[in-house]
Image (cartoon, rainbow, N blue to C red; front, top):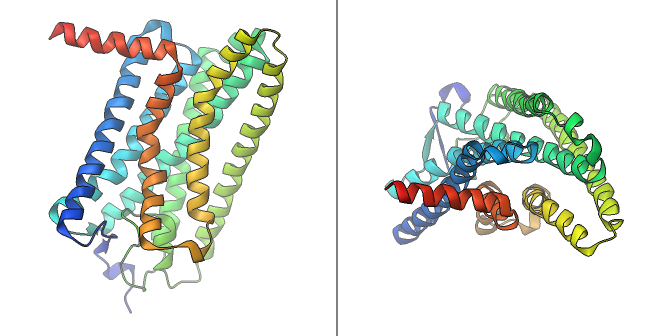
Length: 310
């Protein structure tokens, strides 16, 4: 029997058994991470440099891109390192840091998506009050509240999880450190404290989810009352990217954590963990840029300007 004081490192789940598959996983992760870095980097640069994009919607999109960059940079580099060098270890402090930053960026992303839903609701349902309800100061306060809430949420989870004594080995059944996997290693009854923090976080997430659903019910009712087909199409096109990103984010996470234990298998669990932790940060910029002509034009202008300079 060992406890957390004697654990100097954890063993992460190997992505593959053979060297060829390990290198294949490395190449796949490299491609996805480069796509996420390029897409989110271009989004941040386009919004920051394009003065006509200094609106609430694009301000929150910039924050979302920052959270996506942070999320993928938390989990993917270590997985790529382990695949390339045929190892599976991560230090105790490295595991704690990875868990903290993953919870931080995932929480921030969900809170920002909720705020972006409010932006769409005010834009479509209360357009005359848009400038009042979503002024620059109000937007800054909402973004700061999202990041601060994510910071506190991650701090509480990390502190409560890693304060537990660990006596069931040091093998983490994921390719990155995550709360449920660390709790499985605990032998203490005090995990109920972390369970309490988890229930509170789930309650907050559920409130955000209810707010998103309620907002979209009101949005769809307002859009369907627009007399012209062109007006309805324009309104729906501004909501589609956000709705697609929210659906991808929530569906992958919910299916991963609420699926039946009988459905679990190492390959399925690996695919799902990649699907909800790695794929969304790479797809989000693509979803937004494909449906938003202003952002697409700003990104194109940014890229052509860089090419002309060189």
